[in-house]
Image (cartoon, rainbow, N blue to C red):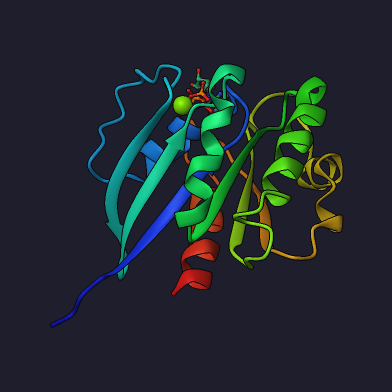
Length: 171
Ligand code: GTP
Ligand code: MG
């Protein structure tokens, strides 16, 4: 038969960056009722896209829960890292979290794909993709296959561009 490939995707990034908003917009089982609340701990979502059965682990980005991220590194096939492009003050915190993740023993030696969303591109004075990329130091990330794209979690604009890149790499 035609077994769909099972893929684990870990979604991380600081609190309020828009992770749950983006994951929900990709999930055909979710209705958009505009009622997204900050994630407590994490939330596991399963849905299929093209020939893949996806399990997306939507982590909380709040400081007190960030220690949970690393427990999922060992099993992960791909990472989605969401950045709030309007939150210039905290890009250094996001960069720090990214570096910790990339240097973690369970991810360090694996060439998994990482999709970066520079989210909230609707907000005036938000950073461009190039600015976000520089702020995160992505040009120094040579051990991973990464891609960054600008998006708007509320309208969905740009999300499929990034997601299709990820799906294409995994397949
Ligand atoms: P935690 O679960 O706390 O880690 O946050 P999160 O990253 O899951 O963020 P969430 O999806 O809960 O979104 C945080 C807030 O940002 C919500 O009020 C969203 O409606 C809003 N938001 C998400 N994407 C966008 C966007 O593209 N533009 C704007 N203006 N607001 C957005
Ligand atoms: Mg959330």
